[in-house]
Image (cartoon, rainbow, N blue to C red; front, top):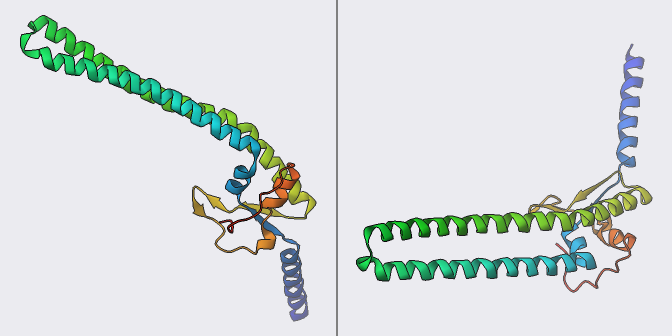
Amino acid sequence: MRTLLFLFAFGLITSVASAQTATKIGYADVDYIFSQMPEFKQIDADMRSLENQLKKNLEAKGQEFQRKVAEYQQNLNTMLDAVRQNTERELQQLQANLEKMQQDAQAEIQKKQASLMEPVYAKVGKAIEDVAKENGYTMVLNQQIGGLDVILYGDTNADVSDMVLKKMGVTPAPATAPKK
């Protein structure tokens, strides 16, 4: 019985040890990968352009609203009650329209960014998968999620970011400062 238990324990330890040596884990800095891609630079420029356009529209509507509020305040003492009430309703409606315009602009920015980034996410995901398979990685982790480090320490040999860029045909820029 002891021999059988010893053989079972030895077999379990051996299988665990061999499973551990077969595991190869890498990590990628997805933000770094995106920053090196020409598509990302174009998307960034497109998003800035859209944001500037929407900001100008909002500022124009905001200035119109401010002008009407100032006009209302200037003429408040000489207005008839009916005109004053009508003007107040109009100002409330303008303010509500301005707030809705701000919300719509924010939604439009998010929708545009998602539609532009979707193919980039797919391309990077496919390249990470290909690099992992070609180099025998069991797992590839993201170095950061939401600005928080997921990989607190990682051997630089396990960083597959540059391999992923090369797989997509992007030559990584020479490092002037170490990546995060």
